Amino acid sequence: MGLGKAKILINGADCGLEAILLGVTTSIGGFLFGYDTGQISGMQIFQDFINRFGQGPPRNKAFDDIILSLVVSLMSIGTLIGALSGAYTADWWGRRKSLTFGVAMFIIGNIIQITAMNSWVHMMMGRFVTGLTRGSVVASYQLLITFGILVSNLINYGVRNIEGSSASWRIVIRLGIAFSLPLGIGVLFLPESPRWPAGSGRVGRRSHFYGPSSRLEGGPHNPLVEDDFQEMHSTIMQQANVGTGSWWECFAGSDKPRVVYRTLLGCAVHFLQQSTGVNYFFYYGANIFQSADIDDPILIQLVLGAVSVVTTFPGLYIIERVGRRIPLIIGACWQATWLLIFAAVGIARPPDQYESSGIVMIVAACMFIASFAMTWYVVIGEIFPLRTRAKQASLATASNWLGNFMISFLTPFADSGIGYAFGSVFFGTNAAAAIIVYFFLYVTKSLALEQVDIMYS
Picture 1 (cartoon, rainbow, N blue to C red):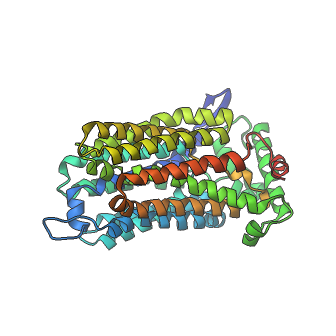
Picture 2: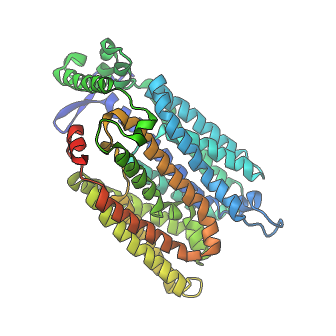
Picture 3: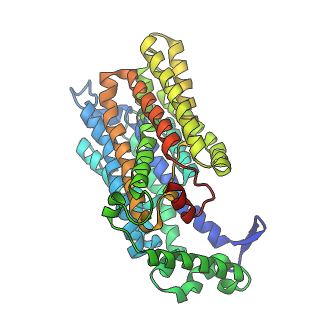
């Protein structure tokens, strides 16, 4: 890399600049995820986008519900497939090559979208290919995801005045390619994850992978590096000793307590995360507020993105201090309350007739997004036993993206059929989420795997 022994002091420990660069580069994946999530909301109301891919007579085009559903939601199916296959490709190729391949496919998917002229199928397939790579280039970089959503909203806001030109939506997608290049190129110059060669039996090569990143005195033989490596190697050996469980074990049980219970719980919580209604706003917010006769719906979408970023910071602190269970319960109740207000006001006093209703609904949406950002970015892999963890985590991921697909696919039909009453449905799903977490999810903060097994027994 040419950084030599450059290092800085962080929390009392020397940290090599290459290690910092590694973290920054790979976290771009979270940003790309958020950017992809946020861009479609504004693009779907740009006039040129509607004229090219909408249906109806030339001067009065609009999206049919089924077409809009497919264009928006098929990316979620691609992400589901990519997330499940990403775990296998990372084992085969290592994380570095998997990321490079994922970025290449991400760029191809965006090029397919940019070259779409008048075919909604062309655009839809481009989003599908992009979705395939999202699963392999991102992890749970919560803050970067929200920041990516904000940036896409900001760019949509910046190009809204040229919505009659194809440049409006093509600029948004092209910038996605530009944002992906630092990840795709940067990862080529970074060391492979030390866990991959260790897991592949190449323990003796740890100096090649640890040395450049540590830059500690003594290099790979520094006691801190040695202790870290031995701990990692011990974990890998423990996994090898317990073996790898089959898919059937996730549902039929094993010698570990309540495996089926934990499988279903993980799937339920991840499915409910998407069923809270967050992507009702992130995918269709601009459309919703436009139908509510809001003067600048893309500006409101930008506000929602900003709220999400700002409130993520206290959320990270809260989860670190008290764990996940209590924030999940309180957050679900808070979200249910504001979604009920959103629905009730929209039904009783339609915002296209009462300006004050639009203001109340915007506030309700902001309060909902704030709560979600602070409490409902869920990662509950710690509830799974070691033997079946990888497969149970895959099933939970599948449930998450199935929920994402269902919301993104059904929303246009719901808006046409029941309008703002759809918010009442999300009130019910949030209430159900609070009940399920309260009765079935245990606190696992600071517990070892063996302690979690005992607790679930």
